[in-house]
Amino acid sequence: MSKTLPCGRKRANPPSQNDRSGDLWKSRLNDFLKKKGLRTTRPRELVAGIALSKKTHFDIQTLVKDVNSRHSEISPATVYRTVGTLCEAGLLTETLQSKGGVALYEASLDDEHHDHVVCVDCNEIIEFHDSNLERAQNRAIESLEFKPIRHRHVIYARCLKLTR
Ligand SMILES: [Zn+2]
Ligand SMILES: [Zn+2]
Image (cartoon, rainbow, N blue to C red; front, top):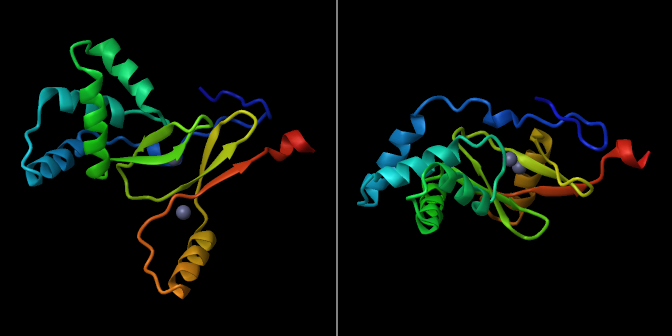
């Protein structure tokens, strides 16, 4: 499974996305919909199941194609709407933008925070977490008299193995 990148680095397995434990998201989605006074519909649940089982960062067009290949009766509009709902419910997060400025999403089923490094040569997305960095960020924000709520941190980088 581990494909090698142009720089020789092993393609990273997203650490936070290995455990898609069962149908936990279903109850979270249902609770959220109920609170909003919305019904759980079959198409909505099918789209959610496909989106939340994705192991990588993905754009909506890719999701629309995947949904269409399995359930051609589900319209792209439903996919777009469901992605919006899943983001609002906190089950899906828009984490970064691709090189072309397209929004990329990833499932956020666990509450573990991570940030991203994007390789400027091959566009591979690597996830990382550095507690020192997180603490330094929080201190900086608190010194401005703010309470940090969330952040997105993307570093565009070149692999040292290629530049050596
Ligand atoms: Zn962070
Ligand atoms: Zn990620």
